[in-house]
Image (cartoon, rainbow, N blue to C red; front, side):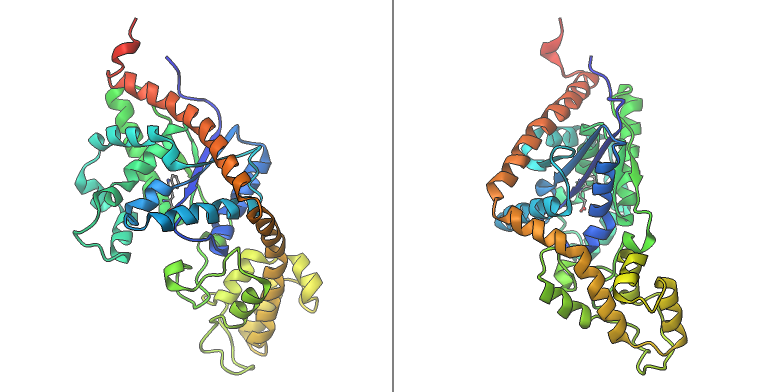
Length: 354
Ligand code: TRP
């Protein structure tokens, strides 16, 4: 029988419901590229979770389909490299659906209802009891995504922690009922807290397409400048001399996530570093426009190469799909191995007996 892989395997995914924004970049994409280039992992699987996107977009298949293209362009633009990471589309791996179906027997409705991520998302979407079953059960499907590849490391944002907790529960319960079959995953959180969740440019807690408060990786230089110059800051910082707050101020949160000492040298050399800039803002005498101009310089520098690569790949969309197709072939082989193990653990491997 095939065994659980002992390799160091990473899996992570995004729902293709919109273009990716700088919150995704800071919170996960940048980290994935670093993981990929660290050479510490034997396999890295990056999945476009179209089937999961359909769980709450059932009536909008064209939207999901179009966003698969946006997301793969965003991936390649950020530097995910198909020679090092396996990029693929969830729906091309039917093994995932079958795994989820068996895991469903190990999870209760009560347990799903208690999952804080599910709770929050039900609220955000105003589903109440009219929640689609597929959406309700997505922590189970996500456990299938993770375990299919024997992933032990799952890079996620803080909001996905309850998902990982539930995935571990399912793995433990499967292994205790049917014998050691599945690998147990661990989350990997971004190490810079400001990166873990960027607020929107309007100061709301989350950057989200439906709130219209995002800076996208595909935004032009002009769009970025306009958005930054209109950003929400500290509402009590009205006059130049007023003391300012830097903690709940999205401009400073973005600077914490994106700026480094080199940016200060190049664009704002009168300050040594971000601490010096923050201190000045807090004691008063530093205007928002100056800080925003600096943030704009930083973001332009960080995003220009990403945008250039994106524009280049956008001219070669069929090549991007060929990457996804080949990634799918590799991912399917890995998932099929796990499914084989699961089937024999479940005693439904009728025709493979000698
Ligand atoms: N739910 C994740 C998100 O919305 C996407 C996702 C699907 C995922 N399957 C996964 C993340 C497995 C980590 C592991 O971003």
